Length: 124
Image 1 (cartoon, rainbow, N blue to C red):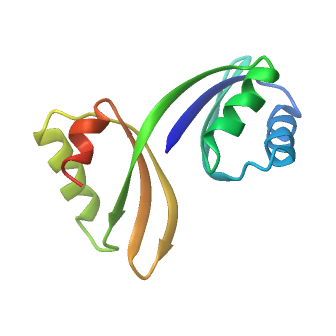
Image 2: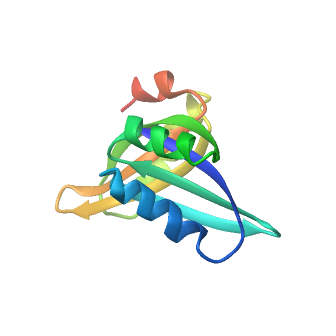
C-alpha cells in the first residue's frame, strides 16, 4: 500500500475535483485525512490502485509525495494501540501517520506509514 500526500489550494471544490477524477479513473479511496493551513490544503490518501492514482495526480499537475504503508490488525481492546506503538518504538521505527481502514470481528485494520517499513514489516 502507498500513502499519497497531496497539496491542494484551500478553496471550495478542490477535494470534490480530485475525488471525482480518482473515481473516473476507477480508484477507490480506502482512507483519507485532510487539514488546511492558511491558503494550503493537505490531503493524505490510501487508495486501492496506486498506479492509477499516480497517473491522476500527475496529469492534474498536483504536487504529491508517496510513502509505503504497512498493514496492521489490532485487537479491539484497551492497550492494543499502545502495544503496537511500543513495539515499533523499541525497534527505532517512527510512526508518521496511521489510518483506520475498517473494523470487523477480526479487529481494527490500520494502514500505518512509518519511516522504516522494512523493519516494521519484520515485526508484524
